[in-house]
Image 1 (cartoon, rainbow, N blue to C red):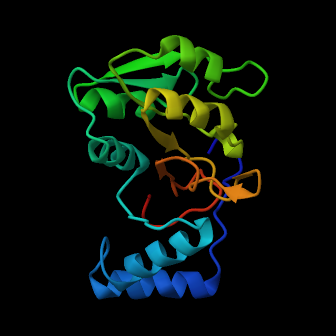
Image 2: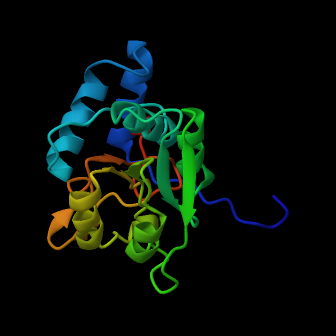
Length: 190
């Protein structure tokens, strides 16, 4: 590899055995291991529900669908994020309204959200990027006045907390990722 050292993932022997067991079971995407993972994740985050899907983009799309987002609706999204955040909105025929992030935190600015709100705004999708949780207080206050759905793209933020509560319990819907480049990985992405 042109002198660049290969960085290998750390997979303990007991984990490798469990992976082999799943492969041998023939249930690569569903089954008891997935249900066990969903329960463990629900318990860890402290949420009422957890659903494992194939990747975070699909999770965001499902969250938007669950919120009833569709053509003619607007979803406010930060301009500094992975393209999947906005593309999940456009897949449903809705409009992604990009707002600037705070230059100190690189997180969605509540001031920018307030300025972007319109009669067509049905959801706001902050991104707790790089494990840095958003300040939920101003967004929750805006939600009380404007009645939008708060859908958090928490792809990079498993384990993060704000004011003593884990990310995944503040927004109406939160979506995480377990892609190999994230803090924790699995064979599935939720």
